[in-house]
Image (cartoon, rainbow, N blue to C red; front, top):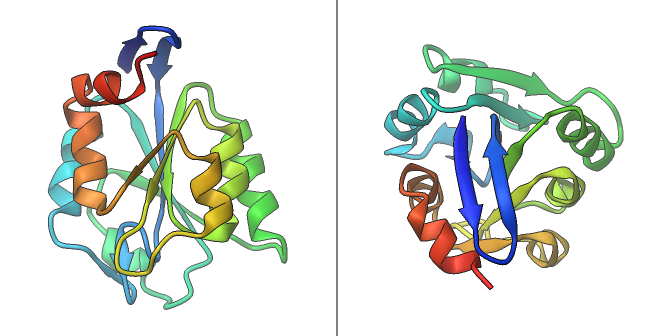
Length: 154
């Protein structure tokens, strides 16, 4: 568990990290360099879930050997499905960039938008707690939680 006490916001006990795949931890279906090592480190403190429509059909191969559970979206409502998945988790941080990540951001205890090379949907950005420009820096926030505290304290 990752415990965060953010002045003016309270105590957050993070048990789950939910990661969007394409556009967030992967670009053109390939894991972004540096992500795997950070995921392994973070798996010591949280259960990690990768949730995706698997547009490129690569998530299984790219996440093979990583300590993550992969959730492939099956419905026609990816936004709703991501929100429902996250609502079932107790203590979650979500990281994403796409419009279909907006509802999971609403359900998360902490939401981090990543602009990255694909950009970030405005709807998702507006529901985020923090916006950052690349996934490795976003994951580093969780590895160095005082950075989150410094950003979000009131």
